[in-house]
Amino acid sequence: MYDAIVVGTGAGGGTAMKILCEAGLKVCAINSGPRTDPENDYRNHRQVYDLKYRGYGDPLRLKGKAHQEPYSVEESEYSEGRDLFEHDIAYSNAPGTDWYWKRCKATGGKANFWGRSSARFGDIDFKAADLDGVGENWPVDYAEISPWFSKAERYMGVASTIQNRPSNPDGEYLPPMAFRCIDYIIQKGAEKIGVPYLPDRCAQLTTDHNHHPACHYCGNCSRGCDVGSFFSPTWFTIPEAEATKNLTLLTNSLVRSVLVDESGTAKGVAYVDRATRKEVEVYAKVVVLAASCVETAHIMLNSKSHHWPTGIANSSGQLGRNLCEHLYGSPGYGYLPRLLGQPATPDNIADSTVAWMPRWQNLKNPREEKFVRGYSVYMGGGCGEFPGYYGQIEGFGPGFKRDLKRYYATTIGALIQAPTLPSPTNYVDIDPEKKDTFGIPQLRFHFQWGPNELLMWEHSKQVMIDLFKAMGGELWGVDDQPNRPGTSLHETGVCRFGNDSKTSVTNKWAQTHDVPNLYICDASIFPNCTDKTTTMPIVAFTMRTCDHMLNNFKKGVHKRA
Ligand SMILES: Cc1cc2nc3c(=O)[nH]c(=O)nc-3n(C[C@H](O)[C@H](O)[C@H](O)COP(=O)(O)OP(=O)(O)OC[C@H]3O[C@@H](n4cnc5c(N)ncnc54)[C@H](O)[C@@H]3O)c2cc1C
Ligand code: SF4
Figure 1 (cartoon, helix red, strand yellow):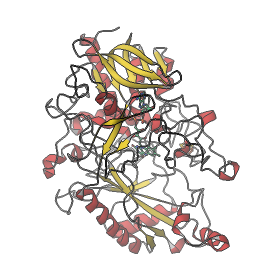
Figure 2 (cartoon, rainbow, N blue to C red):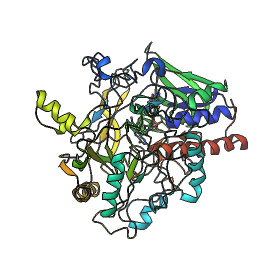
Figure 3 (spheres, helix red, strand yellow):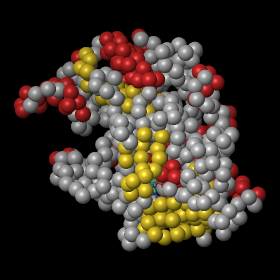
Figure 4 (spheres, rainbow, N blue to C red):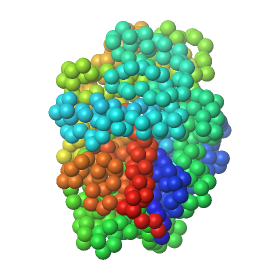
């Protein structure tokens, strides 16, 4: 019997267990995969030719696995290690859905490899429904959450500048990363067409911070950092929780459901020990689910009892609903002829989010464009270790190699980040027929892009035509279609929070309306996507939720074990 169980040790779960342990609670954290061990699991600072499969990994490594699709950049030969990614647990796609569910099952979760873009949400996001009449407002406003964003930024270490943008409230920042050569050129071009191009808010340490060393700009972030110079639970929250001696961390333990007592209150969880395949029960006064958005809904939908016949805390019927995602894809890529023949510079410094185009649409008038809300764009390019533009150049053999070298350091590409709106047809449920290898009913996705985000996609293609012209670039092409849903890893919804228990799963503190000792600490509570990424907000909202929970312990709402 523990004071609290925390399911998942990622950005949300790791933060929750650190705060609860530091407050003196006895916490049992349960994680579905093995413990991440950077020294042995990460192979960064090696060249691809030092690796047996040139960085791509053993092509047979997924043979016999339930989910055989390899994941992108973050799952490569550099982090293949000890089975850090989830391929054993299958999931289903309803007809017409093509969701790509990438899961890191190791401790620390996806934030071991994340892109670190960390903008604040603002009232333009929280009160978007008031502005454009679509969907619902969030149950919090900026004034309420802003101190928690500050707390999260101060803890994580986020580099940026003060920008005074209406779509992007400013925060508390470390010094920004220096612009690359391409950033100055893009910024000039963007200025000409009235588009902002500014330092991103990036959770990468430009100075020593909270006992973590400043980044040495090796550009390996998506393969895991070997020194902890960006926020990840592996380097930040997990060791801090362990230092309190209040933590019991169970690994390779896959939570199946939340257990309830005779009154329908949470009393613990049931998990499968992957090594023995046995089911084990563990008990606590409070249960925190932080298994990452859709997996949290999966666990809840599988937690059926006579109290909760459609899944725990689902009296609203909203559990699994309102699945949102960022539409990703390249609306334009090409090169800058003026850089041909220039020497390469070591500017592969962040491996993604040095600068971006924060939302600039629908700011003065929420209905200025054909779509509502807005999107942001990241620009990549420069002197990466690997010529990622190889697929954009035709040919083979010596001619191909010559062209690759000719364009090195000149190429740039855009990535759109366009939020979807909640739709009644986008949701997750339990597949009535399929079970995973441990006999757990599988999660099933129902998801299609909607007209609003597809209008943003079209809009961004025209912006890229204008931008390339304005900066004297040559556009090579554009993605035929957006990336598959799920690619962005910024899914939200499925356990949305709100003030009305009839239309939301949790209250504004992420405490389920129906089961007061069941809390949620991931992006599943966010009612919709914004044009910003989710991880810093997950940390901030988790800090606030834990503060509320600890007050409830103090007030006697929750009893200690
Ligand atoms: C390459 C890449 C780039 C990204 N770029 C950005 C970015 O720039 N900005 C940004 O904000 N976000 C970015 N993200 C997304 C970001 O990593 C996630 O938003 C964030 O890590 C989610 O944290 P989480 O704790 O909710 O989930 P996760 O990190 O997925 O952690 C969930 C944890 O729960 C455990 N778990 C899952 N199911 C169970 C179960 N049934 N039982 C027990 N344990 C379970 C898992 O093992 C895992 O440890 C990126 C991600 C990747 C991989
Ligand atoms: S660039 Fe910095 S943060 Fe990224 S892996 Fe290298 S040292 Fe770590």
